[in-house]
Length: 133
Image: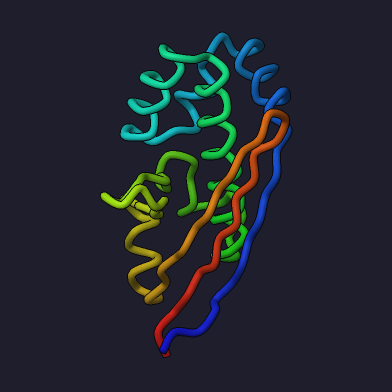
């Protein structure tokens, strides 16, 4: 049986993400998203700019919620690109980490569960970080 290590949630207004993307001429997505997330973002944005923005907003919220759940906030080894939210074969979102963040979590036996959602104006994410006793 696992126990809860921490929880985190984040909500963001999608129009704020659109504003940042405009100000940074799209570089915000490259700064925030990991490689697999970035590929999915580009594919979605090419089909529908609105769905691309929603994807980016949910991933941003996921990273914020995850950083809260593990108790680090956005400080080393937690970096934007070291945590990605990808999908299992079933379509369920899963947390995938890399580099020093992956090592940090492994040393502590921390795993995470995530859920995300978006509507026209907002994106939200909720994370439960768990550890085996």
